[in-house]
Length: 486
Image (cartoon, rainbow, N blue to C red):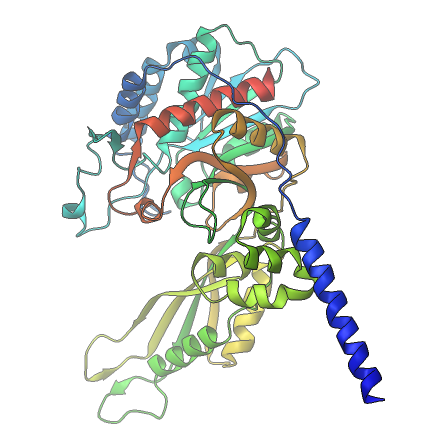
C-alpha cells in the first residue's frame, strides 16, 4: 500500500514538474514585427527653449480651496498661442473652466470616433525648505547639461508642449487628419481636475462626443527598475488606482495631564493606526498588474519566468513576494498610509480630540465603501468617528486588445525601437478619470525615460527632462497622430 502511494506521489510530482517546465520553456514573447519609422528632423534647441519658457510661468496649484493663478495661466495661454501659430490658426480653441484649454482638430471622416490627447498646465509648489537643494531654481527653466530644469518638465507641461509641437510640425507638413483629434489641457489636475478636465469632459458630453480612446500622462519608459530585465520597458497603464482620504477623530474629556484617564484621545487614535497598519488589505494579483507580469515573464530570468508561467500553481508564492513592500506592493494591494496626526497643544494638557488622516490608494475592484467598512471593522471602536475627506473610485480597466492600445503600442515600437512594451497599472491619479463616461478606453503613458533615480524627481527636487528624450516624446506624438488619424 505505502509503495503504491509513494509511486502515485512520484508520478504526480513528475507530471507537475513536466507541466511547469513545458509552460516555462514555451512561454515566449509575442512581439509584433514592427519596423522603426524615421521622422523628419526637429529643431531641438527651439523646442527646448519653448518648454523652458513655459516652465518659468508659475502656474502653481496649491489647495482645492485656493484661487487659481489666473494671471499666470493667461500668460501661459499667450505663450502657447504665440509659440504655435499654425495650431492657433487652424484648430478650434476654447477656454473651459476659466483656464483650461480644449483644441479641436476636425477630421474628414465623421464616422471615426475621435481621439483625445491630454496634459495639464498646473504644477505643484516646491516644498518649503528644499529650495536650496535644487541644482537650478525650480522655475528657472534653465537649460544645462543637455536637460531642461524646473517644475513641469516631468509633470506635466512637457505633455502639453510636446503635443502642440507635434501638431505644429504636422500642420507645417500638410497633415490632415481623417479622425478628429482633441487636445485637452487642464489647469487643476494637481488638485483633482474638477474645474478643468471635469468641465471639458462635461462639455464634450453635452455635444454627444464619444471618444475611441484618451491618452494622458501616467506611466513612462523605465530601465533598471524591473528585477531581472535590463531592457527599457514602456508601460501603458490600462487603469489607475482610486484615491480616498479618511479622517479618524477620537473625542474624550480633556483636563490636566497629572490626572489622566486610562485611555486618552491620542491613545485611541494611536490604537486605531496600529490596528490599520497591522491589518492591511490582502494582496491580490489582478488585471492590469497581472497582465504586466504575464507580458514580461518571457524576458525575465528563469526562476521568475518559471513562477509567473505557472501562476495556476504558484500564484500565492508570487503574490506574497510582491506584497512585501515598495512599488510591487502597491501593484497588488489597496494601500494604507497614515499621513497626518494631530492632537494636543501643551505638554501638561490632555487634548479633548485627536485626529489621524489616512490615505488609501484603491485597486480596481475595491470601492470607497469597501474601504470605509474595512476601517470601521478593523478599528472596532464606536467612539472613533470616520469621515470621508475626499475620494474617487478606481478607474475601470481599459482593454489591451482594443484598437487604441494597439495604436499606442505600434507607435512606441516605431519611435522607440529599443524598448519592450507592456500593460501596467498607474499607482497615482490623472485627469483620465473625468473622461470615462465618454471614452471607450483610457490609457496613460508618456515616453519619458526614467532610471532608478528619477522617480523621486516627480513632485520632488531637481525635476528635469533631457532634451534628447523630449525630442523622442514629440516624435512619438507626431507618429501617434499619423497612426490614429491619418
